[in-house]
Image (cartoon, rainbow, N blue to C red; front, side, top):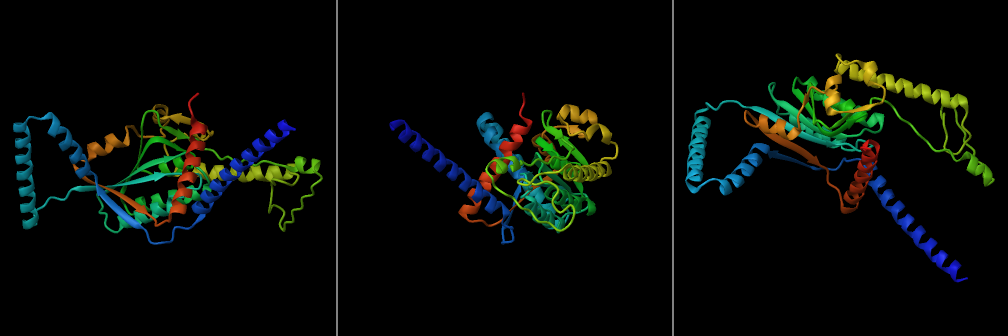
Length: 339
């Protein structure tokens, strides 16, 4: 009797924990499905100034007092000359680079923010400006990443240079976005590729039969529902579902081929993924470099502006979205983890 009591308490605790986990996931799903149509905030940070602050902080420790005074004097003279040029209207135009970040989850929920950031840039960008997208995504739903890639296409359509930098992963839908860039950069151990289409669904039909539970599903249209979670799947339904997957894969390959015509599309569309060094050999990327190094070098000759849009959300929405993103990244890490 005591054993049964302890087991009952253990079972109650387990069910309580499971209910709490499901509640958190439910909140995450609810928050991530809300449409971001409320007014948000656009933030712009000049990265050149941030790099300069880093340099100054280190030099204040490393340099002697005389060297610091000489540096400060040189900077004051440069600022004075710049103000004079501005006053006389003789200021030289510097190239501008707009930096965006996209951290993709399964549903590509950051696409709305990306669209707003791109719209803001297009209102002021000039022909010789550049957009750099720091991309991290293991892919997700086709329609979500298809729209995200279309948003990036707007940059090219306006005649601006688009550079996509991948430090960690741009796979499947993530690579669909990356291939839109005029240049694709990658860190040596970044993961790229996975040009394939995946669909998986559990089926509980046999379990329901054992429990004497009937399941009825009524449809109008021969292929309204090809596979079911609870009904008995047929070979005809599987064949149609596979046909739809192949069609989606063909559209995926055509899109990549259009944006990177030099690729051997047959070789890279097997669903495999590659590290940066091998991806460069295959032509999936153009150069091996981290986004940090690329921007640091570019800052010598251009003004860099990091542009981010944040939609207004309450505490519950922020909490749910953080959980949702955490789950998505955990799934991506498990998919591509080494060993």
